[in-house]
Image (cartoon, rainbow, N blue to C red; front, side, top):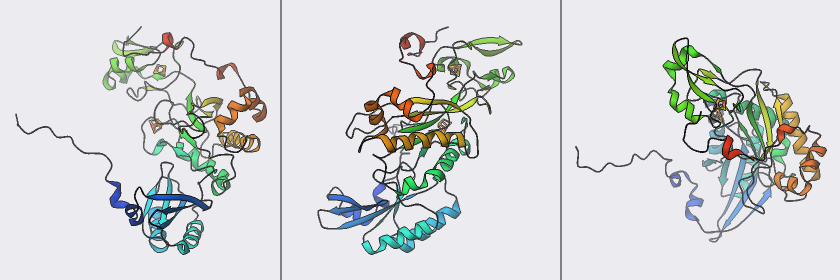
Length: 357
Ligand code: SF4
Ligand code: SF4
């Protein structure tokens, strides 16, 4: 055995300083204040007296070579050649000369890229990978975003909401979706269909059994071959068994729907972080424009805009007016399926790695 210590392999993100605008590096940690001269433009003043203006631009996130070249040409020609992406797929382009701001804004807007997403706007929707990159999605999260943002374009460019609005989409029920003021998530409504011929070759059965949060999967012998079976009365259609065992197909063009959740937020500003709650379910997963989703989202957004007080996030607004009033105002149907207070979850949810049958 080698005597050399086993060193970790560094595979994290590269050091961000090498890509930063020189004004950021020079004034790192020494900023005096910031303001917003107009929607989509941030202005930071350093204690040294240096000033920077940052133009925020919405992108479609999944950029091809044409879009990347187009945007880089604008950044090289009208700005200082530095750009960063925010977690919601907005680009931020910084300049140190105020005179460059307006031509930069115009160049982006002429190319079809909106400037906005700051302050009390509807900023870009953060979305998961969808059909393009992931192997388990039930919908195209980025497609839902495109369809929605086409309709909500002006809310991105203005700062007219009571507070900022963060929307998210997620293309399965279990993995990378985040909390959002409004979240659009896949909702499976039928248990998985099992292709028994493939299970023994493809799936590690104990790990699939352990993965089910309600212990609905059991090992079984089907047609003389080792396979699995699902207790459909227990199954909550979460889809967690499908990633480790693709023969347990749960995606379905008719029965995989979309659900809308509201009132979640990560931030501690003004009120505590909140979990979002289900308000609309069983919405058709209807590509390429998802009109039924857009209608519900616009309804919620416009009701919030009209009724909330200044600085209330969607969750704060609903806490003040109460859920009954929320459903009255939005005219969304309220059903028994909206209620889950997790009473009994200790028994029904698989809270340990123990396998129970
Ligand atoms: S949300 Fe689920 S399906 Fe979508 S990218 Fe993440 S893991 Fe894949
Ligand atoms: S993992 Fe989820 S979808 Fe699969 S059987 Fe269990 S509850 Fe049903």
